[in-house]
Image (cartoon, rainbow, N blue to C red; front, side):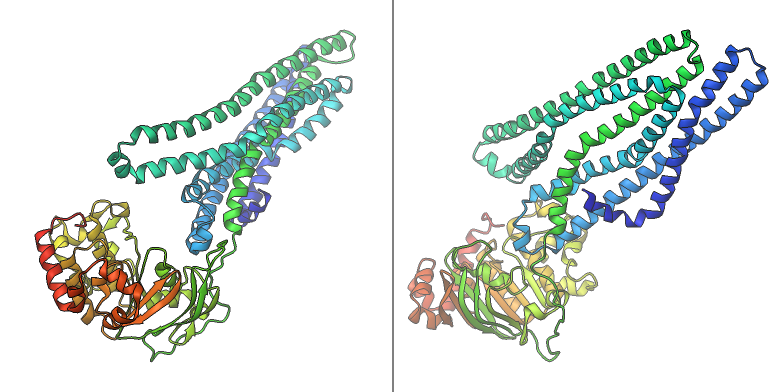
Length: 598
């Protein structure tokens, strides 16, 4: 938790002012009992009222200064702690955004959400307490003990006994509570995970009538969290009456023992009252410190979890000396004997992959599930880095290209279409914020999205829900494709981006893409042979290796894996006559245009 103090640097001057106000607060609180004792003793002795008024006026001034200092401390503590929490959230968010898939897989989404919200809030609360109360506690305790001893040395044992008993009680409670704090944060993670999973999978849950099953899962996690929270809160509740009992017993002891001293003329009444005030200040100071000891363990758990995120070393980062591809190059992608293994995996996902994808050509990848198609594509934008070999763009290793420059060259359409809350236009301009209206309209037309966008009530200004939940799967894919087209990159990557489209839309879109992506490098992962059969170069993957490469007609004769995939989708006659395939697929789609994809 102390490591996070370095993030207080922007607030150093506010902290200095706060320390000055804390000093004023401590000194005024220590002076008040003295004035009170003088006023009481002067009154008992029947002295002139002018002396009482003089001391009373000084007491009011000191009280006013102390009040102003207290208000100032509260204001600055809140400003510093909330500002610190804001900065910390920004740092955590920025750090997570910089993660590659390798780092992101170390933390669950639910855990990252908890760390960015609940954990930072726990730290914020503790820092407010430290700045507002605990910072003054050691000075208050030391000053009050010194004053109390000078006032009545013979009664100092009462303060020592009260503090010892109080720390004993807090120590016992602390021993039982500490192990529960870490468990509490893990249970918050788990509850977040179950809730998020339930909300995102609501349609599937209802389709299988598994509401009761999910309710039981939620109830189990919720009960665990509730039981641990109750245990911790009960310990905290026990502490309050015990501390109040110590307070009251200390007061009784001071009055009882002080009365004896007053009776023997060893002490004045004012001194006894002043000693009582100092004793309360000492106990309150130690109580504030004890509160922080109770809250720090939970906050330290949160600080450790946040520290894990901030301390995670990025595997994918900008090179120290970046290289820029030649301007005359237009996006040549080359794999040179590439081997790739996922972190912790026993076997490589890709082995000895070599090929060249040239501008003006479409390079397609096909293979069974788990053959390594998406793993291969993910190496180009450096979502992962190769284990061995090289991935080159225009002759330069992608690891030597500045990330911003690399991403500028690539238009990526992911396997799972992702849209952001906002409007249709804001989603299409996500990669090209300065794109003109004509360019946006052109990308919509190529992506075959004009019809459904024009059919929306507000057209381009129609709202898109988070994750694009208010549009169909096919519509999401077309918007994702239009978004990549609007960017006008040198390299287009379509990671199984046509799977939710009907055959007719698929055929029209690919036909429109030919003219739009002219002189551009196009890489397509396809699950349907009909989608990739007209590609200039088809690469067949099986178990992470290239088992075939060439055109459709060549692969049918030379690659058994490709032929097996093709025959599982189309008849031999359709495969021999690629043009007929498109006509048949279009006719088939016209009869079933209301299918599940759209």
